[in-house]
Image 1 (tube, rainbow, N blue to C red):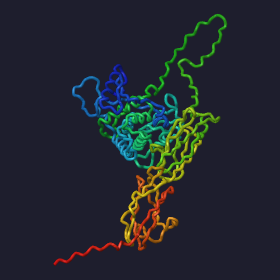
Image 2: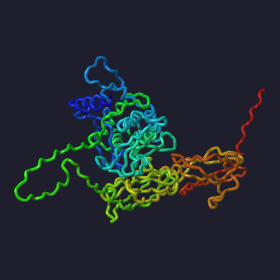
Image 3: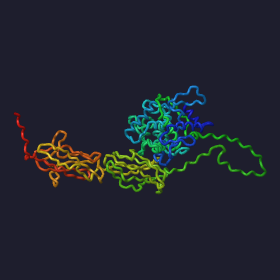
Image 4: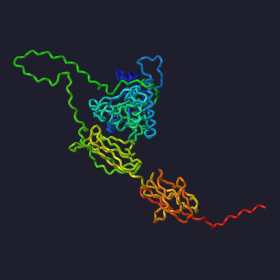
Length: 570
């Protein structure tokens, strides 16, 4: 009934007035940045659909249709008013309820994102709101025990006929369509987006867009990319618009977000209601033309009749559509480098140079408005800013797509970033990037206290050093400490001070040491053998910074007068 009421809000003589009341009631506890316009509709402040929102494969869903039903007028908590008259209004119990497995998937996704991307502040209610408008909570929770939909949930084929034109990118693997892509599953991902955004949310080793756990986690990561903080109204708007680039879609999702924030409850799988209003209601079917009655024959005229040309098409019969014009993507012959500089960064740093790729025709003409996907491949933990290993960018009017900034991980060595054209089989263009180890160009002691010890004893103080690089803290830098023979002979000394290993054995060279987050390193305790004199401890960092520390081993000072013994008492 709630779904039927949602449709009533859009149809009939009182549609506009009722809808205005509905949204005005919801606005009492709006989402951040949500206001109500002159018609009572919720709006996000300064939020407008933007080309930026479609930079990632035309939005997660390819801007596929979605359910337009708004939440009921009342909050989820109140009970029906006894004796109420007039048009029955759903009181919230059915609409506020979320099928158990679907609700569990949303909450698990929120928990995982809280750990992996705490700065995103993703609420599970946002996933529920998107799940509501995309699939009616997996068609009322019609999923099996592991969260996979009992029957596939597919959007219309994106063939450019009333929808976006996205030719097949998965060979029909997910949507069963080898000609065009279709949105798939509870969160309605198109295959080209799922290829990089897909996640394994239930731990079965498979990334399946038809599984609500996988789809919910993928949606969470998708909404949390680009460093967005969803507690910030502007970022929340951007994230939702990136899912489906429509202002009406944004309003609908925000309405359900606030509705679920007011309260919800778990209902059995398969018992949820399915929305009835869809954004493509006017495009679902073309009405058949009314038959045209045959024209009455005209009386013959004098003279020989002049034959007329037959009509190009019978009145009332739709003409055969012409073949669609080629899209910009169809004209791309290959990708070319657009002046990318050498890609090198130190572990943990952002790359200072970006990858630039140009889409061109066979004749070398630049092609704009083409989606280019950049994928990080190889044994590396380097990602694009935001933690994703894939980014899709639309070429500009010069045919150039510039990849987001690369953020180096801790693994050193070479890896590859591959550029490919989305929606067309074109040989990819590979870029080699290198991550070098962290280095320091200076290392100093943090104290000037002399390090002294008696023969066979233990040094009272431990040496602490600080490493820097170009004046900044050099954290996680590898350090080697060696007791050397002299400043002119850096070979390891065989006598004098020493460290102890885990078994208590004497060692005079330590490797595997690293500075902490502040660039500091406290060396282990030092011990002395029976040799006296001055000795050298040399500190060497990755990058070649060195520091020599003097150690002194001397017998105790015997010149000091002993304290007199106390006299025995009488």
